Amino acid sequence: MRLLRRELTPAKSYLALSYCWPDTSLCIVNTPSPDNQDGGIRIPISGQLFRAAVSECMADEGLWIDQVYIDQSNQAEKNISIPAMAALYKNARRVLVVMEDIEVDDAEQKFLENFIPEFENSVGGTIFSRPHFGEVPAYMEKYRIFREFFNKICSSRWFTRAWCSHEMRLGQSHKFYLQCSSDSGQNANRVLAFSGEFLAYMCHLASETPTMYERIREV
Image (tube, rainbow, N blue to C red; front, side):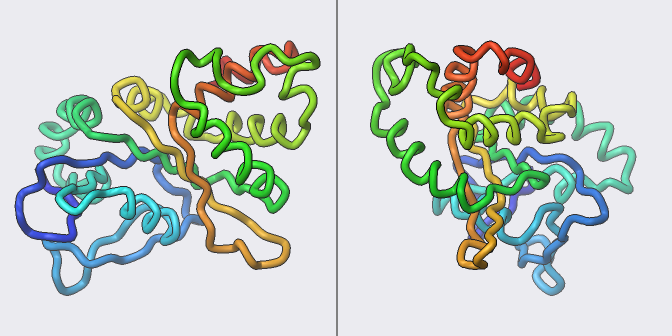
């Protein structure tokens, strides 16, 4: 299996990238690769999201990117590789989900900088022992900015792609990456990341707000 790696030694573990195939408007960046030392390879996501995904790899890990490591012009290779992709995503240490069509604004960043650590520090017990369950009014009802952020996540085209849904079901662990926008320009190159457990937590909080039921079905 070909993997993007920092070193040429065999990988003991790997991560798998999950994304929607880009529109022409999305940025394509070049990066060095052991398979192509001179010109590098073309990565089908923006540079800042790619760098965030690579930073998740441990020293001895590789990164699987289907568009890069399956020759799209070689039908024989595609016929062999595509049926094997289920096993690739199932056996990855983590599936890295890139939502290139979502941007997190300044206000949402500020809210989530406090909210995500609160969730992460509460790990242990059941999902219902996490903060803010059972509050009246419901937590997502009280905080419009959180409700709008969740709506934005649900609107990502990543959730509309059958193969992306399949990759999500297969993965043992997930991490989601979103670009940050900024009116001031200070956070223009930032990336927001959160775990699959945090996505499940948001869904549970949303379930306490009747107006959010339809949105939860989309995730």
